[in-house]
Amino acid sequence: MSEKVLMKGNEAIAEAAILAGCRCFFGYPITPQNELIEYMARHLPEAGGTFLQCESEIGAINMVFGASSAGVRAMTSSSSPGISLKQEGISYIAGAELPAVIVNIVRCGPGLGGILPSQSDYFQSTRGGGHGDYRMFVLAPNSVQELADLTLLAFEKADEYRTPVMILGDGILGQMMEPVVLPEKATITVDKPWATTGRGKRGKNNLVSSLFLNPEELEQHNFKLQRKYDLMKEKETRWESYLTEDAEVIVVAYGSAARLSMAAVNMAREQGIKAGLIRPITLFPFPDQPIRAQAEKGTAFLAVELSTGQMVEDVRLAVEGRSPVHFYGRCGGVVPDPKEILEKIVAIRALQEARSESTEGGAA
Amino acid sequence: MTRKVYSRPQSVVDMPFHYCPGCHHGLIHGLMGEALDELDLTEKTIGVGPVGCGVFVYDYLDTDMIQASHGRAPAVATGVKRALPDRFVFTYQGDGDLAAIGTSEIIHAAARGENITVIFVNNAIFGMTGGQTAPTTLVGQTTTTAPIGRLEEVEGAPIQVCEMLNTLQKPALISRVSVHNPANIMRAKKMIKKAFQCQLEGRGFSFVEVLSSCPTNWRMNPLQALQWIEETMSAYYPIKDFRMPEGGQ
Image (cartoon, rainbow over all chains, first blue to last red; front, side, top):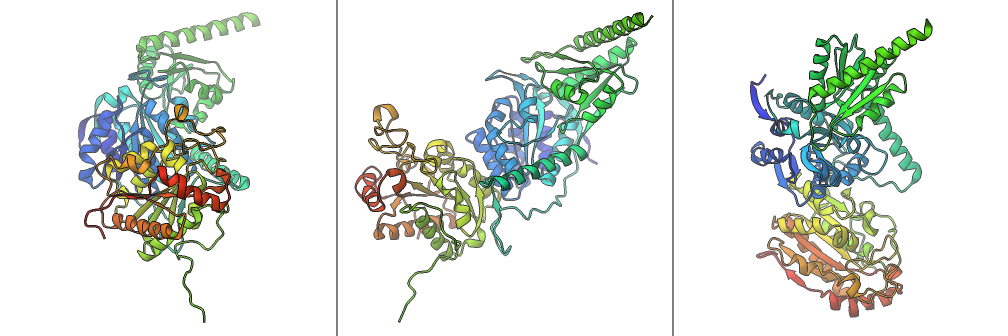
């Protein structure tokens, strides 16, 4: 086990990627993820890999496409406007069933928006983003330690499922420093008989392509991708439950918003309110099951996001009308004080009590 | 007594091309196949195809192939070459793919001196989509999106890609060839082989533009199309070497 070191989030992702066996990194400068590409520029060549600063985000994602086709672990990183540009390439990566790791250190939009932290890329991460019927495996760390751990996981799952994997952070996580125990150097065991490495003595050519002009073939290809996503839902859904057992109000939040929400939940508990937290760690697949299980008990939900409300749609889909779903969000780079979240929890609890009293009154 | 003077290159798959009558894509695949055979490259090659009429190049060349998104083949090839520097990597791109949507990727691959080979098929039109204006369409040439002919004051002047890339420091080989008659076909073959060798010798970026006909979308018969290359197209796109590797074979 390695020692604890103090690292910036962006650098922890980069170091973990090198330890995970990433051998090609293609990037383009954009705030707030620049430390990641700078770390890669300094350290990836030392590890025998290739770092290349590209002409554009589009160039970078297509170089990832090429390196991944050639069978090596490849990665790119960017922030929101840059990810918008990469979406075409991500769609092709999904269609051609290539493994790839894409880091998004989210900033505010739309348009040029601002450089401050945000969670307004939930839709473009979990809803495909690019064209076509595909999904991306999306990991949402909430600490520097998780940035490192989930980076390793991202490479493993990308290879296992032959699919693009996104690490969805934000400006807070990318920029903050925390102690981290770096993962052990990965031993890559996965075989890639499909890779275009030159035919050699293989006996048959390999082709990496996402083109199927025959409608029946393309339908079958799409069904195959869907089966893969179903398998991910079954096997790869990850979340953290905090004080949910007896909770009357459950906050659902990921990443930075989950840290703020946990503080609010603790404050609520101090006031005697039974509050809890469900923190999705995978955004796709989304943890429907623990949310639905609580919804069946009638527990109220509060989705908290650094956006005007994107993940809340998945919470509602999981709840399916079984219990109330509320939302609280700040955006534009404004980060809420946990007290604001607490106020919302208190208000929801008051509403619940008022409702139950009126029900009791009606029955009397 | 019969004597075999020509046979299908081993690197070209034995199947009918889907190309239109008089189109040069099939002929250019053949020249590339011959060069791959002669340099014994089939087993160490990864080709990257375009979006456009050449999209099915992966069906015709008997090597590992990648189908790239529109215009991005030089970036994809860069990724492959950086991952596997000892393999032979080429892109095959048309003028819509390379000179319109893919200008950024081709310019920067050339500027980096990326050790790949680009075969650029210029037929001055978007073929696959039905004959729309390309950046290479000549002034006055009619297309489905320039029904009265390309107007310089509206759509600007056609891009001369070799000339543009020749302003960069790093490319090792830049040449424009044509395949409209036997002498030019022989020169084209030599240049494609030379460009491949350029990469094998680690000299960096090699680029061969091939003037090519599209009788269907030019609304000509194949003979008129060849004549148009000879008289009109090659006047604006001179057939010549722009840069040759120093000390190359």
